[in-house]
Image: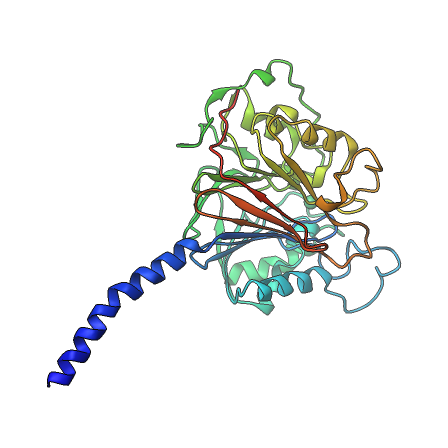
Length: 367
Ligand SMILES: [Zn+2]
């Protein structure tokens, strides 16, 4: 009896200590973000300190988007393989949320393929309807719809939250609509944007799917990242004019791969991001005009690119250490970002191992 009591006391004494240790360990876990290379598509993986995961887009299906020499090789699932490799590396066995920003092949391409390879708890998209169902462009949605019918699919509306545990993920655009009010509690949100005075609009993009993109803002403490999928210029304008509705950001994940149908300076400049990451391919996105807008944005410290842009040449690409892939023969190197609770973060170029530390800093208010 006395031994049992002694044992009980010993365990009781240890218990609070081990609980505190577990809590400290959880607090020390960073938010990890992997910006994958899908050669001009998108696949961005968020692993919350809680362990929950969110994948934004799924890259190209099969061999689409591959260099001509390899485009006809059978049995290739390049981007699905790349995503699965990073999920394994990140110890993700279940995807809690897969956000399909829109149904173009370079975003929805592996929605169905991934569902066959890994459990997916929820899909998030702009709704099953698409007005863009031409033959030759409808394959991604036709393969995704049967999966969607059997999955827990959430139709995102501007202002909704995607409840990833440990993160604050808010929808700012979906199905052609954007938020109408400033984001609550967001630094700089609601401030008048003087850049709107001379701001230009562009003719609306002919492909409505881009216009319908689900756009999100991910917040973790003082860290904020915006990813608008392939949203178009005029909707970036609507998010930033006459008032900046989204506030200031830590990271700008470039809209539409750095294609000049997006990248409105009145938006890009107003968000005052410290770091930009461009999901371009060697020959997709990464236009010199867009690159220059991002490069010149106030407050920008570094401009990371998934690829060197062929079109950008010598004058419109970042220094090589910020380029994850130099050309299409590079094997899908990713950029990793680890964000700590105090807002400081590390970025790593997986190709070279080059790493850069960014100290915590309160977001600058919009001007
Ligand atoms: Zn795209």
